[in-house]
Length: 122
Image 1 (cartoon, rainbow, N blue to C red):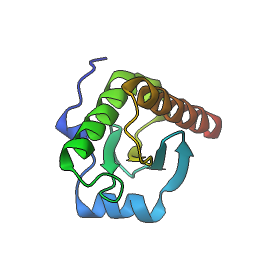
Image 2 (image 1 turned 135 degrees about the horizontal axis):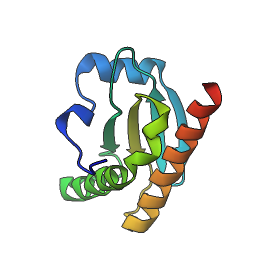
Image 3 (image 1 turned 60 degrees about the vertical axis):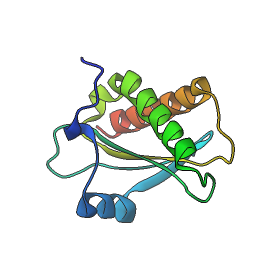
Image 4 (image 1 turned 120 degrees about the vertical axis):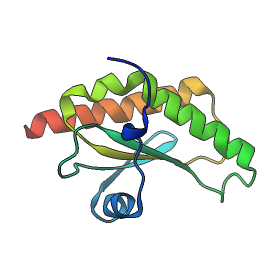
């Protein structure tokens, strides 16, 4: 599997994001909150990342954290291979800028828990 993050693996559009926010299941792990839903008719996992302006006023810091979140997901997305198509939103939920290793571990924990939950249901 390639470790790129192409356009079709990014969650976008008002209807898709609105459905995720309204009907998705929320959870948390470390410095991250996440919302996940199994979309109807999708073929690939799609991801969206968010960093609150309330915690980080400067766009430079928000963009740094979003890059770290996307990179953490991109390098570990094979953990969700057996889970089927999922729409996932990762929300950074800490007031301090954490190291990449910590973010990477939190993303791994989320992906493993989602993979195990979807395997239990099937």
